[in-house]
Structure formats: structure tokens, C-alpha cells
Image 1 (cartoon, rainbow, N blue to C red):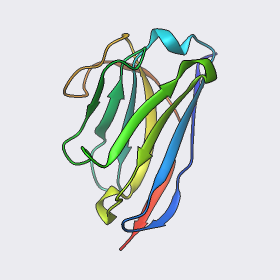
Image 2: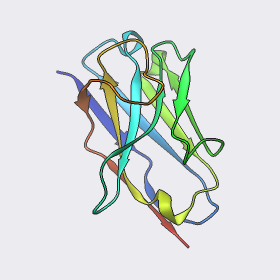
Image 3: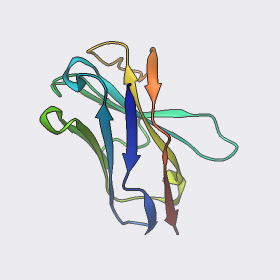
Length: 125
């Protein structure tokens, strides 16, 4: 069955870095765009980034542009989110999700059909 498993979260000081991984199984990763989302307690879920199926196009929320980098290795069935210059406001549970298309939407919206269980990122100030 389709499964997405996030890893790499943790506790980091402000200004530090983390790299999240999203391991995919049960489908051909190279056919789908993948998005990263986050949700902090009391907040709505927000889109963070999206990468097209072959990695040719990437999109970012304004809040993370220039600090986060999304990438993918379809041969390893994994999508990554490199997070640098982390801030306290980046604290959230981060999720990866499969978009029902090979392409992303520039506003990070659209239909996502499978989600991972999430990984917690905590940035101390």
C-alpha cells in the first residue's frame, strides 16, 4: 500500500539546520509531485514547499524562501527538505504528502491524496 514516512525532525537552536526525509513506498515516486506541509499547535496547516515529479520545478512559501530547499532522489524513493537558518516560528509538525499530479501548484494548493504521519521540529530561541 502507499506509504509516506517522514524522519529527521528534532530539537535545534535558532539559526541551526535540519534535513527532513520523506521515504515513499507502494507507488512509483517519479510519477508524482510531493509537497511538504507543517502545522503548529493552534494553527492551520500550511504549505511549505512542493517539488514536481522529476524535480525540475520547486515552489516555496514566502516564509521559508531562501532558507529551505526541497529536493528528491527518485531512485532512492525519497524526498528531502533541507531547512537552514531555522527560526522559532518554524516550530511545527512537518508532513509530506503525495500530490495527485506530476506538477505542483505555485500556491502549494491542490489535491494531495496520501500523507505521512509527521515529524516534529522544535526550534529553541
